[in-house]
Amino acid sequence: MNSTEINFKNIEKELSQQFEIIDEIRDFNQKKVLDAFVQNKVAAEHFMTVSGYGHDDLGREVLDKVFAQVFRAEKAVVRNHFVSGTHALACCLFGNLRHGEKLVSVAGAPYDTMEEVIGTRGDKRASLIGHGVIYEEIPLKNGMDVDFELLEKTVETCNMVLIQRSRGYSLRKSLDIATIEKIVHIVKSKNPDCICFVDNCYGEFVEKQEPLEVGADLIAGSLIKNPGGGIVETGGYIAGKEKFVEQAAMRLTAPGIGSQGGAMLNQSRLIFQGFFMAPSIVSEAVKGAILAAKVFEEIGYISTPKFNEKRTDIIQTITFNAPKPLEDFCKTVQELSPVNSYVTPIPDDVPGYDDKVIMAGGTFIEGSTIELSADGPLRTPYAVYMQGGLNYAHVKIVLKKFIVSKCFCL
Image (cartoon, rainbow, N blue to C red; front, side, top):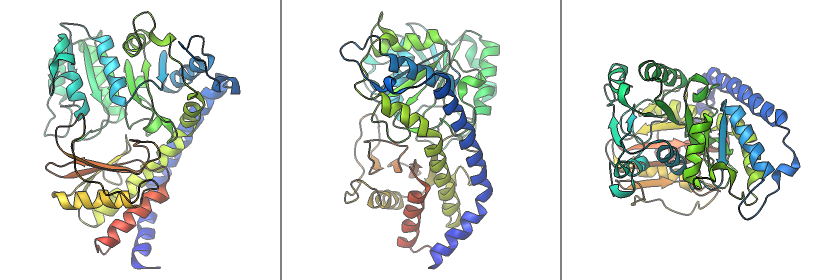
């Protein structure tokens, strides 16, 4: 064995307590998902599909019920027709906000792709602001934390708060379930009718609870992230209180159709199976993120969250403070990807982003971020956002290669 292998073994021994915590969360969530499958009597006939308008699709109805039970929702809409997580989020916003109503983002600016949806960037005509919705952001306290005092003063007159669980392309802390519960409590105490909407992307199954269990009204996410288990080809979900979910569904389809239409095009089995696999796949990704946190800390980079901090999403951020190591890390991820390993990622313009972005990820599903991938905008502080990993071993192989190629001595 070489020195790198020996040191990785030592590091993994140090991480054994964190890994045990992740295993416990995995087992808890796997039981929760299994119970939903059993209690809703999922059967082979639910994998069949219908054509045309998609009326009377029994599998789609049961799929919605399984998601609703797992996320503790009154209703869920799970569809391959959502083209991305941003699309699912946009349906929630446009479906539940009207002209003259107010949306407040509680943790600073949301993820880059949401800026055009809201209208703070790009052509405003098709955005929420262009449709007459008032928008406000609550700046982060010290650039890192939710400002709860300012939140109390701001939410009395708003109709919806947007709570982004993951950090997006920022270095703020991701919001764990306890923090989301505190936000919801403050909002509801000041404004009981305000809709608490959580962007749940990257967070599903990382903790034992989900946002609806601590009082949120509505959540949405992508099926090519955590809940798709790495095998779902496309789609997203919305879950929460029935009236808010149905309003959002009418933006996906049309008023009068809502959640009652849409042929699933032979995707139901994959979505059922991916959801069943998701707790275990997510645990592998989280273990890989913890390993990355420890390794990069050892070689002197700032990496967040710390290896021993509580996890609420699958994203690991490494701050390089220069473009070259950011690009080098992404190239290493690409070189050791199962798909398109021969491709060299370069920074380029990407729809929905203002800065050039470098993206690495030879994934089986295009754009899948539950599979190992790394990306980041070419702007200060040149941080890379590593996420996913269908198995822990793959993440470890990539980290070893980066360490050896850059001649770091652990």
